[in-house]
Amino acid sequence: DITSLEIMFGGGSDGSEKVSSGEIVTLQLGGGANHLGSHLWNLVLEQQAADGGRAGNSSTQNFNVVLRETKGGHLPRTCCFDLSGTVSTSYGDIEDVSSESALDQHDTWSSDRFQVSLPSAAEDETGASRKEEEHYRGYWDEYLNLSPHLSWRSQLVTCFPGFWHKVNAFDSFGDGIDLFSREDVRDAAFDRIRLQAEGCDYLQGFQVLADDLSGFGHVCSEMLLHIRDEVTETKPLVVVGLRESFAQDYVVQMGRSETKQRNIDCINRALATCKLSEVSDVHLVLDTIGTSSQDTKAAVKLYDASALGACLVDSLILGCRLGGDRSAGTLQDVVGSLNPKGGKCSLVSCSADMRPFDAIDSLSLRSLTSMCPTSHLYRQPHSECYIMRGIKKGRRERALSSQAEAQEWFVSQWKAAAEEKGLHDMALCPRAFIVDPSAVPLPFNFPMAGVLDPAVSSAPTSLGASSLASVARFSSSQAMGKDMSRLCSDFKKVCLSPGSPSVNSMLQAWDLGKEECEEILETLETLRGSYDNEFAFYSSDEDDL
Image (cartoon, rainbow, N blue to C red; front, side, top):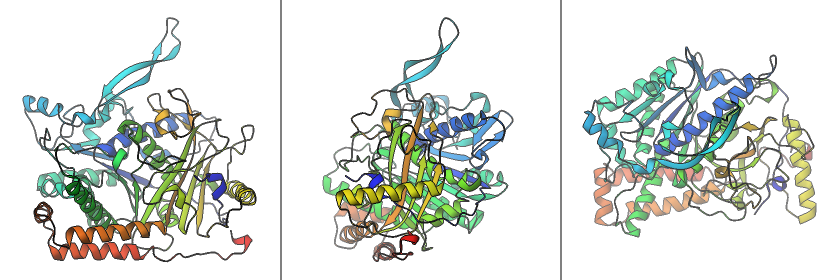
Protein backbone atom coordinates (compact mmCIF):
# COMPACT_ATOMS: atom_id res chain seq x y z
CA ASP A 1 0.00 0.00 0.00
CA ILE A 2 1.72 3.17 -1.19
CA THR A 3 0.19 6.59 -0.88
CA SER A 4 0.64 8.52 -4.09
CA LEU A 5 1.49 11.71 -2.20
CA GLU A 6 4.42 9.83 -0.69
CA ILE A 7 5.98 8.50 -3.86
CA MET A 8 5.69 11.11 -6.60
CA PHE A 9 8.09 13.87 -7.48
CA GLY A 10 8.71 15.41 -10.83
CA GLY A 11 11.27 16.86 -13.19
CA GLY A 12 11.65 20.47 -14.18
CA SER A 13 9.90 22.12 -17.10
CA ASP A 14 11.39 24.45 -19.65
CA GLY A 15 8.36 26.70 -19.20
CA SER A 16 7.72 26.91 -22.92
CA GLU A 17 4.12 27.21 -24.06
CA LYS A 18 2.83 24.33 -26.15
CA VAL A 19 0.05 24.69 -28.65
CA SER A 20 -2.76 22.16 -28.84
CA SER A 21 -4.13 21.93 -32.35
CA GLY A 22 -5.57 19.37 -34.70
CA GLU A 23 -7.98 16.53 -34.17
CA ILE A 24 -7.84 13.05 -32.64
CA VAL A 25 -9.98 10.24 -34.06
CA THR A 26 -11.15 7.50 -31.69
CA LEU A 27 -11.95 3.93 -32.76
CA GLN A 28 -14.08 1.74 -30.46
CA LEU A 29 -13.86 -2.01 -31.04
CA GLY A 30 -16.00 -4.37 -28.99
CA GLY A 31 -18.56 -4.29 -26.21
CA GLY A 32 -16.19 -3.14 -23.49
CA ALA A 33 -14.76 -0.41 -25.73
CA ASN A 34 -18.22 0.87 -26.59
CA HIS A 35 -19.43 0.82 -22.99
CA LEU A 36 -16.32 2.84 -22.12
CA GLY A 37 -16.91 5.09 -25.13
CA SER A 38 -20.46 5.92 -24.04
CA HIS A 39 -19.21 7.07 -20.63
CA LEU A 40 -16.26 8.87 -22.24
CA TRP A 41 -18.34 10.98 -24.60
CA ASN A 42 -20.85 11.73 -21.84
CA LEU A 43 -17.96 13.09 -19.76
CA VAL A 44 -16.58 15.13 -22.66
CA LEU A 45 -19.99 16.61 -23.52
CA GLU A 46 -20.59 17.50 -19.87
CA GLN A 47 -17.21 19.25 -19.72
CA GLN A 48 -18.02 21.11 -22.91
CA ALA A 49 -21.33 22.30 -21.45
CA ALA A 50 -19.62 23.48 -18.26
CA ASP A 51 -16.77 25.10 -20.18
CA GLY A 52 -19.17 26.88 -22.53
CA GLY A 53 -20.88 28.45 -19.57
CA ARG A 54 -17.80 30.34 -18.49
CA ALA A 55 -17.82 34.11 -18.84
CA GLY A 56 -15.90 35.85 -21.60
CA ASN A 57 -13.07 34.02 -23.31
CA SER A 58 -12.22 31.88 -20.31
CA SER A 59 -12.77 28.55 -22.05
CA THR A 60 -10.04 26.19 -20.87
CA GLN A 61 -10.31 23.36 -23.42
CA ASN A 62 -10.41 23.03 -27.19
CA PHE A 63 -13.13 20.44 -27.66
CA ASN A 64 -12.74 20.52 -31.44
CA VAL A 65 -9.90 18.07 -30.84
CA VAL A 66 -12.37 15.26 -30.07
CA LEU A 67 -15.76 16.65 -31.19
CA ARG A 68 -16.97 17.81 -34.59
CA GLU A 69 -19.68 20.36 -35.14
CA THR A 70 -22.77 19.46 -37.18
CA LYS A 71 -25.95 21.37 -37.98
CA GLY A 72 -27.76 19.73 -35.09
CA GLY A 73 -24.96 19.84 -32.52
CA HIS A 74 -21.62 18.24 -31.70
CA LEU A 75 -20.75 14.62 -32.42
CA PRO A 76 -17.70 12.65 -31.22
CA ARG A 77 -14.91 12.03 -33.71
CA THR A 78 -15.33 8.29 -33.33
CA CYS A 79 -16.20 5.06 -35.12
CA CYS A 80 -18.03 2.44 -33.05
CA PHE A 81 -17.70 -1.22 -34.12
CA ASP A 82 -19.59 -4.07 -32.49
CA LEU A 83 -21.39 -7.31 -33.31
CA SER A 84 -24.91 -7.52 -34.67
CA GLY A 85 -27.44 -7.66 -31.85
CA THR A 86 -25.31 -5.71 -29.39
CA VAL A 87 -26.97 -2.34 -29.94
CA SER A 88 -30.55 -1.26 -29.45
CA THR A 89 -31.31 -0.97 -33.18
CA SER A 90 -30.10 -2.35 -36.48
CA TYR A 91 -28.30 0.91 -37.33
CA GLY A 92 -24.91 0.29 -38.87
CA ASP A 93 -25.55 -3.31 -39.96
CA ILE A 94 -23.32 -4.09 -42.94
CA GLU A 95 -25.81 -6.48 -44.50
CA ASP A 96 -29.57 -6.15 -44.62
CA VAL A 97 -31.57 -8.50 -42.44
CA SER A 98 -35.25 -9.33 -42.37
CA SER A 99 -37.38 -7.98 -39.57
CA GLU A 100 -37.71 -11.50 -38.16
CA SER A 101 -33.96 -12.12 -38.11
CA ALA A 102 -33.35 -8.64 -36.71
CA LEU A 103 -35.67 -9.46 -33.85
CA ASP A 104 -33.73 -12.67 -33.21
CA GLN A 105 -30.45 -10.75 -33.17
CA HIS A 106 -31.90 -8.20 -30.77
CA ASP A 107 -32.08 -10.87 -28.09
CA THR A 108 -28.48 -12.03 -28.49
CA TRP A 109 -25.66 -11.20 -26.11
CA SER A 110 -27.93 -10.41 -23.21
CA SER A 111 -24.79 -9.75 -21.14
CA ASP A 112 -24.39 -6.55 -23.15
CA ARG A 113 -27.43 -5.13 -21.44
CA PHE A 114 -27.01 -3.28 -18.19
CA GLN A 115 -29.50 -2.95 -15.39
CA VAL A 116 -28.81 -0.20 -12.90
CA SER A 117 -30.55 2.53 -10.94
CA LEU A 118 -29.67 5.91 -12.40
CA PRO A 119 -30.76 9.44 -11.53
CA SER A 120 -33.01 10.92 -14.16
CA ALA A 121 -33.85 14.56 -14.69
CA ALA A 122 -37.46 15.37 -13.84
CA GLU A 123 -39.63 18.27 -12.81
CA ASP A 124 -41.63 18.56 -9.65
CA GLU A 125 -45.09 20.11 -9.32
CA THR A 126 -43.63 23.62 -9.31
CA GLY A 127 -41.68 23.00 -12.50
CA ALA A 128 -38.32 22.99 -10.73
CA SER A 129 -35.72 20.52 -11.92
CA ARG A 130 -34.97 17.65 -9.57
CA LYS A 131 -33.28 14.28 -9.67
CA GLU A 132 -34.90 10.98 -8.94
CA GLU A 133 -33.77 7.38 -9.05
CA GLU A 134 -34.91 5.45 -12.10
CA HIS A 135 -34.48 1.75 -12.77
CA TYR A 136 -32.93 1.61 -16.22
CA ARG A 137 -32.12 -1.22 -18.58
CA GLY A 138 -30.58 -1.01 -22.01
CA TYR A 139 -27.59 -1.36 -24.34
CA TRP A 140 -24.45 0.76 -24.44
CA ASP A 141 -25.83 3.06 -27.13
CA GLU A 142 -28.92 3.81 -25.04
CA TYR A 143 -27.08 5.68 -22.29
CA LEU A 144 -24.90 7.73 -24.65
CA ASN A 145 -26.27 11.25 -24.15
CA LEU A 146 -26.56 12.31 -27.78
CA SER A 147 -29.72 13.83 -29.17
CA PRO A 148 -31.77 11.39 -31.30
CA HIS A 149 -32.41 14.05 -33.94
CA LEU A 150 -28.69 13.98 -34.79
CA SER A 151 -29.18 10.48 -36.30
CA TRP A 152 -25.84 9.67 -34.77
CA ARG A 153 -26.18 5.87 -34.83
CA SER A 154 -26.20 5.77 -38.61
CA GLN A 155 -23.10 8.01 -38.67
CA LEU A 156 -21.05 6.41 -35.91
CA VAL A 157 -22.09 2.78 -35.40
CA THR A 158 -21.10 -0.21 -37.53
CA CYS A 159 -22.38 -3.67 -36.60
CA PHE A 160 -20.46 -6.60 -38.03
CA PRO A 161 -22.70 -9.32 -39.53
CA GLY A 162 -23.31 -12.66 -37.90
CA PHE A 163 -25.58 -14.42 -35.47
CA TRP A 164 -23.90 -14.68 -32.10
CA HIS A 165 -26.62 -16.45 -30.11
CA LYS A 166 -25.46 -19.33 -27.89
CA VAL A 167 -22.15 -19.75 -29.68
CA ASN A 168 -18.60 -19.29 -28.49
CA ALA A 169 -17.98 -16.38 -30.83
CA PHE A 170 -15.24 -13.80 -30.55
CA ASP A 171 -13.77 -14.78 -27.19
CA SER A 172 -10.33 -15.42 -28.74
CA PHE A 173 -7.97 -13.20 -30.70
CA GLY A 174 -8.04 -15.43 -33.76
CA ASP A 175 -11.85 -15.45 -33.94
CA GLY A 176 -11.71 -12.19 -35.82
CA ILE A 177 -9.77 -13.69 -38.73
CA ASP A 178 -12.71 -15.20 -40.60
CA LEU A 179 -14.91 -12.15 -40.08
CA PHE A 180 -12.35 -9.59 -41.21
CA SER A 181 -11.28 -11.66 -44.20
CA ARG A 182 -14.61 -10.71 -45.79
CA GLU A 183 -14.03 -7.93 -48.31
CA ASP A 184 -17.37 -6.22 -47.64
CA VAL A 185 -16.69 -6.11 -43.89
CA ARG A 186 -13.20 -4.71 -44.34
CA ASP A 187 -14.24 -2.10 -46.91
CA ALA A 188 -17.17 -0.87 -44.83
CA ALA A 189 -14.96 -0.54 -41.73
CA PHE A 190 -12.15 1.21 -43.61
CA ASP A 191 -14.64 3.62 -45.21
CA ARG A 192 -15.80 4.68 -41.74
CA ILE A 193 -12.21 5.39 -40.71
CA ARG A 194 -11.47 7.26 -43.95
CA LEU A 195 -14.50 9.53 -43.54
CA GLN A 196 -13.50 10.46 -39.98
CA ALA A 197 -9.92 11.19 -41.05
CA GLU A 198 -11.06 13.31 -44.00
CA GLY A 199 -13.22 15.36 -41.63
CA CYS A 200 -10.10 16.59 -39.81
CA ASP A 201 -8.25 19.79 -40.77
CA TYR A 202 -5.06 18.53 -39.12
CA LEU A 203 -5.05 14.95 -37.86
CA GLN A 204 -3.07 14.52 -34.65
CA GLY A 205 -3.44 10.76 -34.58
CA PHE A 206 -5.69 7.91 -33.49
CA GLN A 207 -6.60 6.46 -30.13
CA VAL A 208 -8.06 2.97 -30.35
CA LEU A 209 -10.15 1.39 -27.59
CA ALA A 210 -10.36 -2.36 -28.07
CA ASP A 211 -11.31 -5.58 -26.32
CA ASP A 212 -7.90 -6.75 -27.47
CA LEU A 213 -7.99 -10.36 -26.21
CA SER A 214 -11.15 -11.13 -28.16
CA GLY A 215 -11.71 -11.34 -31.91
CA PHE A 216 -11.66 -7.55 -31.90
CA GLY A 217 -7.93 -7.77 -31.14
CA HIS A 218 -7.34 -9.14 -34.65
CA VAL A 219 -9.72 -6.54 -36.12
CA CYS A 220 -7.76 -3.87 -34.26
CA SER A 221 -4.41 -5.04 -35.68
CA GLU A 222 -5.82 -5.06 -39.22
CA MET A 223 -7.23 -1.56 -38.81
CA LEU A 224 -3.92 -0.26 -37.49
CA LEU A 225 -2.09 -1.75 -40.47
CA HIS A 226 -4.61 -0.10 -42.80
CA ILE A 227 -4.14 3.27 -41.09
CA ARG A 228 -0.37 2.97 -41.43
CA ASP A 229 -0.61 2.00 -45.11
CA GLU A 230 -3.46 4.22 -46.32
CA VAL A 231 -4.06 7.08 -43.86
CA THR A 232 -0.85 8.13 -42.11
CA GLU A 233 2.63 6.67 -41.78
CA THR A 234 3.80 8.99 -39.02
CA LYS A 235 0.89 10.11 -36.84
CA PRO A 236 0.82 8.36 -33.45
CA LEU A 237 -1.42 5.39 -32.77
CA VAL A 238 -2.36 4.83 -29.12
CA VAL A 239 -4.11 1.56 -28.22
CA VAL A 240 -6.02 1.06 -24.97
CA GLY A 241 -6.48 -2.68 -24.46
CA LEU A 242 -9.50 -3.57 -22.33
CA ARG A 243 -9.48 -6.88 -20.50
CA GLU A 244 -11.11 -8.68 -17.58
CA SER A 245 -13.66 -6.38 -15.89
CA PHE A 246 -13.17 -3.69 -18.55
CA ALA A 247 -14.02 -5.99 -21.49
CA GLN A 248 -17.16 -7.63 -22.78
CA ASP A 249 -17.35 -11.30 -21.81
CA TYR A 250 -17.88 -13.11 -25.11
CA VAL A 251 -17.54 -16.63 -23.68
CA VAL A 252 -20.70 -18.67 -24.10
CA GLN A 253 -19.32 -22.19 -24.37
CA MET A 254 -19.36 -24.01 -21.06
CA GLY A 255 -17.29 -26.92 -19.86
CA ARG A 256 -13.79 -25.83 -20.86
CA SER A 257 -11.12 -27.33 -18.69
CA GLU A 258 -8.94 -24.97 -16.67
CA THR A 259 -5.89 -26.09 -18.64
CA LYS A 260 -7.50 -25.36 -22.00
CA GLN A 261 -8.75 -21.95 -20.86
CA ARG A 262 -5.31 -21.11 -19.46
CA ASN A 263 -3.71 -22.04 -22.78
CA ILE A 264 -6.22 -19.92 -24.70
CA ASP A 265 -5.60 -16.98 -22.39
CA CYS A 266 -1.84 -17.29 -22.95
CA ILE A 267 -2.21 -17.35 -26.74
CA ASN A 268 -4.62 -14.40 -26.66
CA ARG A 269 -2.21 -12.31 -24.59
CA ALA A 270 0.76 -13.20 -26.77
CA LEU A 271 -1.05 -12.40 -30.01
CA ALA A 272 -2.49 -9.13 -28.69
CA THR A 273 0.86 -7.96 -27.33
CA CYS A 274 2.79 -8.98 -30.43
CA LYS A 275 0.41 -7.87 -33.18
CA LEU A 276 -0.61 -4.56 -31.60
CA SER A 277 2.89 -3.55 -30.52
CA GLU A 278 4.13 -4.01 -34.07
CA VAL A 279 1.89 -1.23 -35.42
CA SER A 280 1.19 1.09 -32.45
CA ASP A 281 3.27 3.63 -30.54
CA VAL A 282 1.72 3.06 -27.10
CA HIS A 283 -0.20 0.04 -25.82
CA LEU A 284 -1.97 0.77 -22.54
CA VAL A 285 -3.66 -2.15 -20.78
CA LEU A 286 -6.55 -1.90 -18.31
CA ASP A 287 -7.25 -5.29 -16.79
CA THR A 288 -7.76 -5.14 -13.04
CA ILE A 289 -9.82 -3.20 -10.52
CA GLY A 290 -7.12 -2.89 -7.89
CA THR A 291 -7.46 -1.22 -4.50
CA SER A 292 -4.95 0.81 -2.55
CA SER A 293 -4.67 -1.91 0.08
CA GLN A 294 -4.68 -4.98 -2.11
CA ASP A 295 -4.29 -5.39 -5.86
CA THR A 296 -6.87 -8.04 -6.58
CA LYS A 297 -9.34 -8.59 -9.34
CA ALA A 298 -12.81 -7.77 -8.18
CA ALA A 299 -16.17 -8.67 -9.59
CA VAL A 300 -17.23 -5.32 -11.02
CA LYS A 301 -20.05 -4.71 -13.45
CA LEU A 302 -19.00 -3.67 -16.93
CA TYR A 303 -21.14 -0.55 -16.61
CA ASP A 304 -19.11 0.61 -13.59
CA ALA A 305 -15.70 -0.57 -14.81
CA SER A 306 -16.16 1.20 -18.14
CA ALA A 307 -17.01 4.44 -16.30
CA LEU A 308 -13.68 4.22 -14.48
CA GLY A 309 -11.91 3.45 -17.76
CA ALA A 310 -13.60 6.48 -19.35
CA CYS A 311 -12.13 8.78 -16.68
CA LEU A 312 -8.66 7.42 -17.44
CA VAL A 313 -8.94 7.69 -21.24
CA ASP A 314 -10.32 11.22 -20.87
CA SER A 315 -7.30 12.11 -18.72
CA LEU A 316 -4.90 10.53 -21.21
CA ILE A 317 -5.74 13.06 -23.93
CA LEU A 318 -6.71 15.97 -21.66
CA GLY A 319 -3.37 17.66 -22.30
CA CYS A 320 -4.15 17.76 -26.03
CA ARG A 321 -7.29 19.80 -25.30
CA LEU A 322 -5.94 22.23 -22.73
CA GLY A 323 -4.76 25.62 -23.91
CA GLY A 324 -1.93 27.95 -22.94
CA ASP A 325 0.88 26.81 -20.68
CA ARG A 326 -1.25 23.91 -19.40
CA SER A 327 -1.27 22.24 -22.79
CA ALA A 328 0.73 19.06 -23.25
CA GLY A 329 0.93 19.76 -26.98
CA THR A 330 -0.29 17.21 -29.49
CA LEU A 331 -0.85 13.48 -29.19
CA GLN A 332 2.72 13.06 -30.45
CA ASP A 333 3.96 14.95 -27.35
CA VAL A 334 1.88 12.72 -25.06
CA VAL A 335 3.32 9.64 -26.76
CA GLY A 336 6.81 11.09 -26.33
CA SER A 337 6.31 11.40 -22.57
CA LEU A 338 5.27 7.73 -22.39
CA ASN A 339 7.94 6.49 -24.79
CA PRO A 340 10.98 8.73 -24.14
CA LYS A 341 13.44 6.27 -25.68
CA GLY A 342 11.61 6.54 -28.98
CA GLY A 343 11.24 2.78 -29.28
CA LYS A 344 8.79 1.12 -31.59
CA CYS A 345 6.12 0.68 -28.92
CA SER A 346 5.83 1.39 -25.23
CA LEU A 347 3.79 -0.89 -22.97
CA VAL A 348 2.09 1.37 -20.45
CA SER A 349 0.49 0.69 -17.09
CA CYS A 350 -2.05 2.85 -15.31
CA SER A 351 -2.90 3.69 -11.72
CA ALA A 352 -5.30 6.26 -10.39
CA ASP A 353 -7.23 7.72 -7.51
CA MET A 354 -10.70 9.19 -8.00
CA ARG A 355 -12.49 11.16 -5.28
CA PRO A 356 -15.51 13.44 -5.07
CA PHE A 357 -14.40 17.04 -5.39
CA ASP A 358 -13.66 18.77 -2.04
CA ALA A 359 -13.38 15.35 -0.36
CA ILE A 360 -9.62 14.86 -0.78
CA ASP A 361 -7.42 14.72 2.30
CA SER A 362 -4.87 12.27 0.94
CA LEU A 363 -4.52 10.27 -2.22
CA SER A 364 -3.77 6.60 -2.60
CA LEU A 365 -3.11 5.18 -6.04
CA ARG A 366 -4.52 1.82 -7.05
CA SER A 367 -3.12 -0.05 -10.01
CA LEU A 368 -5.41 -0.82 -12.93
CA THR A 369 -2.79 -2.84 -14.80
CA SER A 370 -1.89 -6.23 -13.34
CA MET A 371 1.56 -6.28 -14.95
CA CYS A 372 2.58 -3.34 -12.77
CA PRO A 373 0.86 -3.55 -9.37
CA THR A 374 0.81 -0.68 -6.89
CA SER A 375 3.76 -2.13 -4.97
CA HIS A 376 5.95 -1.59 -8.04
CA LEU A 377 4.99 2.03 -8.72
CA TYR A 378 8.24 3.44 -7.34
CA ARG A 379 10.58 0.69 -8.56
CA GLN A 380 12.71 1.19 -11.65
CA PRO A 381 10.35 3.40 -13.66
CA HIS A 382 11.27 4.25 -17.25
CA SER A 383 8.83 7.14 -17.65
CA GLU A 384 5.85 8.63 -15.86
CA CYS A 385 3.07 11.03 -16.76
CA TYR A 386 0.71 12.41 -14.10
CA ILE A 387 -2.62 14.03 -14.90
CA MET A 388 -4.06 15.99 -11.97
CA ARG A 389 -7.58 17.40 -12.09
CA GLY A 390 -9.20 19.49 -9.37
CA ILE A 391 -6.49 18.62 -6.81
CA LYS A 392 -6.04 20.94 -3.82
CA LYS A 393 -3.19 21.19 -1.33
CA GLY A 394 -5.85 21.32 1.36
CA ARG A 395 -9.61 21.64 1.53
CA ARG A 396 -9.40 25.40 1.97
CA GLU A 397 -6.66 25.88 -0.59
CA ARG A 398 -7.17 26.68 -4.24
CA ALA A 399 -6.64 23.89 -6.74
CA LEU A 400 -3.20 23.33 -8.24
CA SER A 401 -3.06 25.13 -11.58
CA SER A 402 0.46 24.80 -13.01
CA GLN A 403 3.15 22.20 -13.60
CA ALA A 404 5.51 24.06 -11.31
CA GLU A 405 3.00 23.96 -8.43
CA ALA A 406 2.39 20.26 -8.97
CA GLN A 407 6.10 19.45 -9.02
CA GLU A 408 6.81 21.55 -5.93
CA TRP A 409 3.95 19.94 -4.06
CA PHE A 410 4.98 16.38 -4.93
CA VAL A 411 8.62 17.02 -4.02
CA SER A 412 7.63 18.45 -0.63
CA GLN A 413 5.28 15.54 0.07
CA TRP A 414 7.92 13.01 -0.92
CA LYS A 415 10.58 14.56 1.30
CA ALA A 416 8.21 14.72 4.27
CA ALA A 417 7.16 11.10 3.84
CA ALA A 418 10.78 9.96 3.34
CA GLU A 419 11.82 11.60 6.61
CA GLU A 420 8.84 10.19 8.50
CA LYS A 421 8.96 6.61 7.20
CA GLY A 422 12.58 6.29 6.17
CA LEU A 423 11.79 5.61 2.52
CA HIS A 424 14.58 5.30 0.00
CA ASP A 425 15.13 7.89 -2.67
CA MET A 426 12.87 7.40 -5.63
CA ALA A 427 14.34 6.27 -8.93
CA LEU A 428 14.98 9.00 -11.48
CA CYS A 429 13.21 9.05 -14.82
CA PRO A 430 11.48 11.53 -17.15
CA ARG A 431 8.26 12.73 -15.50
CA ALA A 432 5.56 14.90 -17.03
CA PHE A 433 2.77 16.74 -15.22
CA ILE A 434 -0.51 17.84 -16.79
CA VAL A 435 -2.61 19.97 -14.46
CA ASP A 436 -6.20 21.19 -14.70
CA PRO A 437 -7.55 23.08 -11.67
CA SER A 438 -11.13 22.26 -12.65
CA ALA A 439 -12.78 19.14 -11.30
CA VAL A 440 -14.58 16.94 -13.82
CA PRO A 441 -18.33 17.66 -13.99
CA LEU A 442 -20.32 14.45 -14.13
CA PRO A 443 -23.29 13.62 -16.36
CA PHE A 444 -26.55 12.67 -14.66
CA ASN A 445 -26.17 8.95 -15.48
CA PHE A 446 -22.57 8.56 -14.32
CA PRO A 447 -22.02 5.84 -11.66
CA MET A 448 -19.82 7.78 -9.23
CA ALA A 449 -19.63 4.90 -6.75
CA GLY A 450 -18.38 2.63 -9.52
CA VAL A 451 -15.15 4.59 -10.06
CA LEU A 452 -14.12 5.00 -6.42
CA ASP A 453 -11.62 2.88 -4.60
CA PRO A 454 -13.65 0.15 -2.86
CA ALA A 455 -11.11 0.17 -0.03
CA VAL A 456 -11.98 3.74 0.92
CA SER A 457 -14.48 3.39 3.75
CA SER A 458 -15.69 6.96 3.37
CA ALA A 459 -16.60 6.50 -0.29
CA PRO A 460 -20.25 7.25 -0.99
CA THR A 461 -22.37 4.23 -1.77
CA SER A 462 -24.90 6.07 -3.90
CA LEU A 463 -24.92 8.54 -6.72
CA GLY A 464 -25.15 12.24 -6.14
CA ALA A 465 -21.68 13.80 -6.34
CA SER A 466 -21.60 16.36 -9.14
CA SER A 467 -17.87 16.53 -9.83
CA LEU A 468 -14.77 14.40 -9.59
CA ALA A 469 -11.17 15.15 -8.64
CA SER A 470 -8.52 12.71 -9.78
CA VAL A 471 -4.89 11.81 -10.24
CA ALA A 472 -4.05 9.41 -13.07
CA ARG A 473 -0.57 7.97 -13.55
CA PHE A 474 0.54 6.46 -16.86
CA SER A 475 3.96 4.84 -16.82
CA SER A 476 6.33 2.25 -18.16
CA SER A 477 8.75 0.44 -15.89
CA GLN A 478 11.06 -2.52 -15.56
CA ALA A 479 8.13 -4.47 -14.08
CA MET A 480 6.86 -4.77 -17.65
CA GLY A 481 9.94 -6.80 -18.54
CA LYS A 482 9.25 -9.31 -15.79
CA ASP A 483 5.69 -9.74 -16.97
CA MET A 484 6.88 -10.15 -20.56
CA SER A 485 9.38 -12.80 -19.44
CA ARG A 486 6.57 -14.88 -17.95
CA LEU A 487 4.51 -14.44 -21.11
CA CYS A 488 7.42 -15.57 -23.31
CA SER A 489 7.99 -18.63 -21.15
CA ASP A 490 4.30 -19.58 -21.10
CA PHE A 491 3.86 -19.05 -24.85
CA LYS A 492 6.89 -21.21 -25.58
CA LYS A 493 5.49 -24.05 -23.48
CA VAL A 494 2.00 -23.83 -24.97
CA CYS A 495 2.80 -23.29 -28.65
CA LEU A 496 6.36 -24.49 -29.30
CA SER A 497 6.42 -27.60 -27.17
CA PRO A 498 4.41 -30.75 -27.93
CA GLY A 499 0.94 -29.54 -27.06
CA SER A 500 -2.57 -30.86 -26.70
CA PRO A 501 -4.65 -31.67 -29.79
CA SER A 502 -7.07 -28.85 -28.95
CA VAL A 503 -4.26 -26.25 -28.93
CA ASN A 504 -2.80 -27.62 -32.16
CA SER A 505 -6.18 -27.54 -33.91
CA MET A 506 -6.78 -23.96 -32.75
CA LEU A 507 -3.37 -22.81 -34.00
CA GLN A 508 -4.01 -24.56 -37.29
CA ALA A 509 -7.39 -22.85 -37.68
CA TRP A 510 -5.67 -19.48 -37.18
CA ASP A 511 -2.87 -20.33 -39.67
CA LEU A 512 -0.24 -20.32 -36.94
CA GLY A 513 2.39 -22.91 -37.72
CA LYS A 514 5.70 -23.43 -35.95
CA GLU A 515 7.44 -20.74 -38.00
CA GLU A 516 4.75 -18.16 -37.23
CA CYS A 517 4.85 -19.01 -33.52
CA GLU A 518 8.62 -18.62 -33.50
CA GLU A 519 8.26 -15.17 -35.07
CA ILE A 520 5.72 -14.19 -32.42
CA LEU A 521 8.07 -15.39 -29.68
CA GLU A 522 10.95 -13.42 -31.21
CA THR A 523 8.84 -10.24 -31.23
CA LEU A 524 7.84 -10.79 -27.59
CA GLU A 525 11.44 -11.36 -26.54
CA THR A 526 12.54 -8.22 -28.36
CA LEU A 527 9.85 -6.25 -26.55
CA ARG A 528 10.88 -7.81 -23.24
CA GLY A 529 14.48 -6.86 -23.87
CA SER A 530 13.60 -3.17 -24.07
CA TYR A 531 12.59 -3.27 -20.38
CA ASP A 532 15.51 -5.31 -19.08
CA ASN A 533 17.81 -2.45 -18.17
CA GLU A 534 16.81 0.48 -16.05
CA PHE A 535 17.93 3.82 -17.48
CA ALA A 536 17.96 7.38 -16.21
CA PHE A 537 17.98 10.66 -18.09
CA TYR A 538 18.85 12.84 -15.13
CA SER A 539 21.78 13.11 -12.79
CA SER A 540 21.33 12.80 -9.06
CA ASP A 541 21.69 16.55 -8.56
CA GLU A 542 18.67 17.94 -6.75
CA ASP A 543 18.26 20.69 -9.36
CA ASP A 544 17.59 18.03 -11.99
CA LEU A 545 14.79 16.27 -10.13
